[in-house]
Image: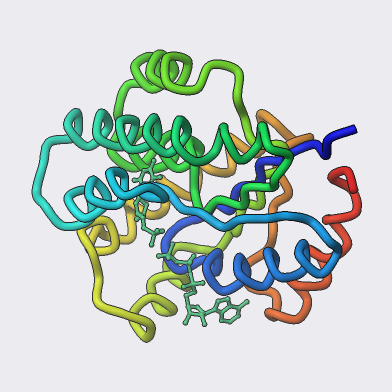
Length: 205
Ligand SMILES: Nc1ncnc2c1ncn2[C@@H]1O[C@H](COP(=O)(O)OP(=O)(O)OP(=O)(O)O)[C@@H](O)[C@H]1O
Ligand SMILES: Cc1cn([C@H]2C[C@H](O)[C@@H](COP(=O)(O)O)O2)c(=O)[nH]c1=O
């Protein structure tokens, strides 16, 4: 019997700690003999990475941003995610459509109806099997970002924007408690790793 692929996503406001843990998580899966790949959105394919460059750096309207996010996602799904899952691989992805609900919906105040329509069109019933939401107050995330790197177009948004994004994420997690695991980003890296390690067993190995 062929192995079952799994789709795992990492979510959270910028600076909440996703990138710190995702490589470690993929390594832990591989140590258990799981064929896992890491990807990210926007991005993950040559075309989607080019769209990422634009999305993170080029000024654009809210609607253009929303449509480019989904254009990048469609390419990523067609060329990388769906083939990998069909081959029984695990795809561990830094952000997916929950980011769109949180940033373009919560942060920018975009129409929920449009996001829902695009979500249905672009990926139908495909949803992650597990989503880790790294939850951190906006002011703490801003402090962590400041010491880490140069800000892109999203990271230059003010604290009120990130408070709305965080709230939208928390609402999403409340709507799908079976899919989400909310990780308190204030915990130590070691504590978070223990939590993730324990969780891997619960998602079907
Ligand atoms: N649990 C933690 N405790 C203390 N510092 C942390 C913790 N997790 C991450 N950090 C630090 O916070 C900073 C931001 O973390 P990281 O880059 O992982 O965030 P991110 O959520 O991936 O952000 P982005 O979405 O913008 O890429 C880094 O300097 C990292 O070392
Ligand atoms: C998928 C997706 C992403 N974003 C935003 C969120 C982040 O600020 C950037 C990506 O940067 P990261 O360092 O890789 O986290 O893109 C968004 O607004 N909407 C989305 O759907």
